[in-house]
Amino acid sequence: MYMPRAFAEDDLAGLDWLLARDAFATLVTCGGDGLPLATHLPVLYARDGDGVVVEGHWAKPNPQAAHVGQALLVVHGPHHYVSADWYPDKAEAGRVPTWNYAAAHLYGRVELIRDEAALASIVARLGERFEPEAGGRWRYDPDDPRERALLRGIVGFRIRAERIELKFKLSQNHPRANVSGVIDGLRGLPGERAAEVAALMADRLARRKTD
Image 1 (cartoon, rainbow, N blue to C red):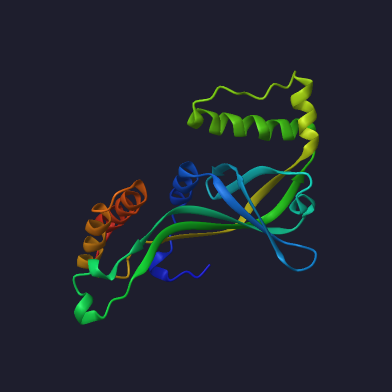
Image 2: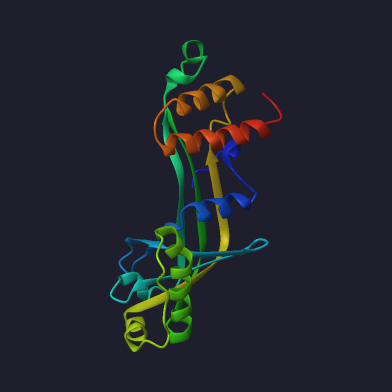
């Protein structure tokens, strides 16, 4: 991804935060015809120091379920339109609107998982990860033959990240007054999306050492 130095993050705590916030990601591979394939799916994320592993599964008929090779996982963070009206220096500097956002790209080789026990583990852990958010109580039951039979309809994957690009584009390339103006503008809007981007910007501004 295009990565101006001002927006590059090197602290993987940012990746932890993105995937704790929203673990519904986009997995991109290249098909046999050279065209890209993309699947939107929930993932399991684990990090040990700089080591990052992502797991999940496809439906077996999905063309990606036969892919062995490099893949790109796109992690989506909060984002919002930024009006040039929010910049105090808009007139003299000729400012234009932009879009602020946070995102991550993880690159690595796909390992296919077809073993029943390993697939059961992925399904069980996905339930444990997402059921509480839905207020549900479902748990994978390995003793239920119907649930075990459903494992035959999926193919699991594991990706060990070989390269991670972490981008938080939050107006860091603007003077402090402009950043404060955007934060105020976002805070004046309804909805969680604007508030979330404003909070990220305020956090980065508090850490800023220079104007």
